[in-house]
Structures are given as structure tokens and as C-alpha cells.
Image (cartoon, rainbow, N blue to C red; front, top):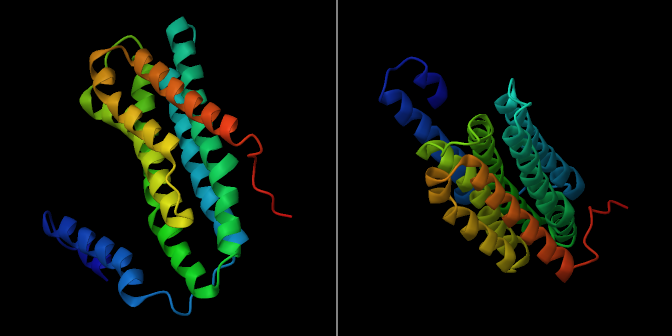
Length: 235
């Protein structure tokens, strides 16, 4: 009803109604509780995984759009490769490690705790994961388009801040879901945040190289510590 009412009013009342609708929508499950919720772990995890795939796909589309008409320039080719590596690092971070543990955790809990985990880990804590990828998509378009120039503040924050938001959201998710502090991912998020001023002051290619290095080091660290990690086993 609030969204419908917003269609008939002007600024700033429209934005206030939007905000009220979002607050009510996301505070409702906390205030009302999760009694009566039924969660199928495999289905629930798979559907949220598809949302991550769609977001990553949008990032790849933005890489291609940013490189359109400039693929013959060596700097652009390198930027495209680096951007794809960053997207691959985010993909592995979610599907290679996070998702398998998430499904096993949901399967191993009772109905009430499972519903609370589904609410917190997915309805809430997947938001920064998806938002991080989408912000990265926004920034990477500008970075690939202008590889030799520093980024404007907004694209710089979107590019490095998006990767940081993904990793920090991952840390929050893992703490809620497994009560584990993912120190490597926390450091990756902090390091990505520190690259924001670099993206503003240095060529965009340098920011992409720094983010790629962060993703590669983070992935290598986890593979070294947990050599048996792999995609989720649904058997």
C-alpha cells in the first residue's frame, strides 16, 4: 500500500514512503518472528545462489560494455582480464566455499533455528553480498572505459567499495551462520577499502590490479589452509 501511495505523491513524500516500505518489509520478520516458516535447505540455498550468479553476470556484462569499441587497446585488454579475474574470485568465494557450508548448516538445525538462520543469513546478510557485486559492476564499467585515468569518486567507491562490501558481508554471514571469524576475508575487505583513494589518485588499471591481487591472495590463502574445499556436494 505504501508503494502504491508513493506513485501518487511528489518528492520528498515519495522517497519517505519508499523508505517506510523498506523498513517495514525488513523489520517485519524480526518483530513478528519466524514461527511457522518452513525452509527447504537445498532449494533455499540454490535460489539465493542464482541471485548471486545474476549479479555476477551483470558485472561481466558491464565489463564488456565498458570495453566496447576499445578492445584493440592493450590496456583495455588487460583491464578486461583483471576484471574477469576479480569476478571469478568473488564467484569462488561464494560457490567454492561459502555455499556448501551454508547448506550443511541449514540441514543440521531444527525447524525454528533453521528459519532464523534463513532469515538472518539469507534474507538479511545476502543483501551486502549482492549489493557488493552490483556496486562492483557499476565501478568496473568506468574502470574499463578509462583504464589510463583515475576514477571519479563515485565509480572509485563503487569499484573498490563493492568488493570490500562483498567480503565484509561474507564475514558477517559466516559469523552468524557458523560463529566463525573469517579473518582472511576480513583482511580482504579492509584492503579493498584501502584501495578507494588509490582508485581516485592512480589510473584505473592500478586499482583493478590491486583488487585482483587481493582476490588471488585471499583465494590462495583459503586453498592453502583448506585444500579440500570445493563446490557444494548435494548428494
